[in-house]
Length: 177
Image 1: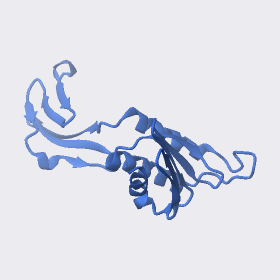
Image 2: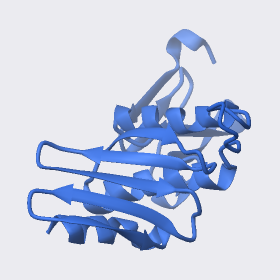
Image 3: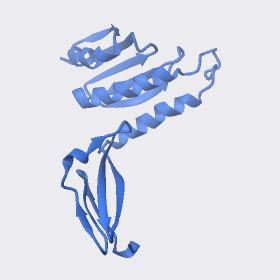
Image 4: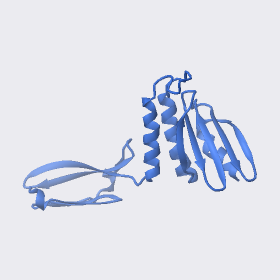
């Protein structure tokens, strides 16, 4: 197999075909496709040529908006904050709060098409998420994944309360209605 004659054809749907100088294998079995924990689509392709067989696993990332990956990184960087990061005795940001905040950002986007605009560390060891448009704004404080605080302000209403992490997208959506 010479590198200059190896061709890989990939699209947003995954690997479509692999062609080498001595063999060509097309992906025909969609059962080989699976979703990994890393959020990527992968294809496991069996290639046989010149009496040799190899298995190759190719990954194609899902289409995620840039703001979402940037916000994930911003939340991940909060792990570097040490206790007393604000010079007022705040605890370090707890890993479970960071992960819950990242999960909530994705759920708000995928379930309700709501985009978080920023994230900040809180003095309670959690993450504050902000959502904002020209017509409304909201804040969510993930200081405890079991009881998340939220605030929504729009032209017709102001609402605040506590809810489980799973119900926050619905609570924000209802407040906007």
